[in-house]
Image (cartoon, rainbow over all chains, first blue to last red; front, side, top):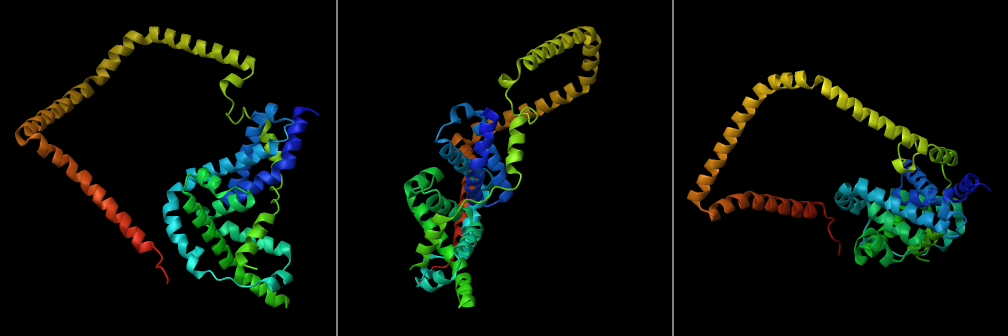
Length: 184
Length: 148
């Protein structure tokens, strides 16, 4: 297979993974597509070393994460101070969390529907919560790794993940209950 | 089951999102025309292009040198004529600046170094105080009240 064909195969195989990674971090379709394309342009520049390497997908994911974080810090840093302040109410706080049984809800709702809802709710979170949440759950990174990657303290990472999860619950719980009642 | 646990479970199991339609084609097209995007460094240009570029640059320099030799005498005279009023204005401005500098130096000698430093430090301190109070105000005003 020629280099061009091999590269096309790499893009075809990894485009969804790269796009998903960028999309879940930057929460913008246009920006995620630009970042994904940049990832593959960089891959093309060093295709001689990536060609046939089983770690190519991992390299692409790492570059996608780094470019997405660079993008966020470059274009959105100026808003982070105020966005964190203004999103506190929307995100919900520690004191509002209650734990309730949801076995019935789980039984009645289709998994794909719940995934779609979670995906949509994730996009609506402020980047200060969405990014650590995505890195923790979707990329499988540890708290310490996330703190190092984002250049923030370990405590802040844990707090933002906690708040992000609580905010997701706040957004999802009423809809899930509604679906459950409709299905009952 | 806790809601947060379930949310975490779903997050972990989210499948990849499909890349936008036509992404593959657009990416391959972008890869095939890097020169058109102007992102190719000179070292990566084809050899023919590099040689042509060097020849063109040499021709440009030679042309500029010959042109300069041709127009130099008349050009310098007309430039001097055109710059004369600006020169006198610049000289006046420079005199004003040196006068102000001398006055400042004399004042500094009379008032003492400590006083002058205090005069310089005062506005800096005022800015720092304003920024500090502003930050505290925004933090307190925007903070969500804690609930017990």
